[in-house]
Image 1 (cartoon, one colour):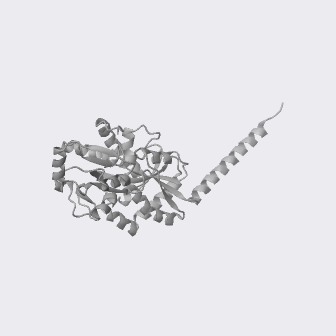
Image 2 (cartoon, rainbow, N blue to C red):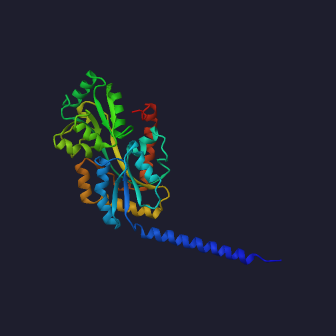
Image 3 (tube, rainbow, N blue to C red):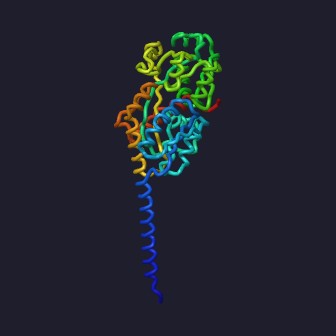
Length: 333
């Protein structure tokens, strides 16, 4: 009778050797990360606040990580195309998703996404937050928020609000603005805040509810007018613009926040390296000054963790999804 134990033992030893080699390869890969350029996917065209955030941070991240950090704009479908691209990317830390409230919270309540916003990504860090501004074309026939609301009531469905797409932060804020003020106007979706702002500058649309990074340069240049900050305090970057509480619409707060994610399955030590680079970048005086100049508040250090981003994103989903679904906000435009 033949004895097969040696073959079994050999097979077992071979399996252990292969497993050990694979572990060494993974370990070595993690230890040498990054060894090639990293891409941050902005899910909108150039020109908006999210694009600005990525481009301000990229050179500092590159210096810290020792590899080029490339910003790639991939707009369309309210940001879901760019986010989906990252969801499908190799989980190796070389393709990252920078996102905003709309792309990583609101979209999940309105679209049948080919990815799960919580379970198909590895959180890296919260970045910053900002209230939105209620702004209008320079020639709009109102000079303050009360006058703006009065004009809307006297001219139902005549005004047009440009948005970065159905379900964007500005669109959601516009819907609730209508509900709170008993006004009605039309929403005109664009592929991002950059194209939306260009439409307002050329008088194709009337109003926007927009992040300061997009609006402040135009406001400072005298090309648009601002009615109010949709928050409870004035922006140091625009101290002359009153809050909604001061301007006559108390409690109408419309904040936006930004975060950074990697594809699900990215090794934890790679996530840790990316997080450390982000934390260092957010503490850089040049980044702090640039963000302050456009009205952004950087999250405190204890909130710049993967765990904090995951918990905050989940709390935002739990808060906003029932509201959006109850309001029947859907991509009909």
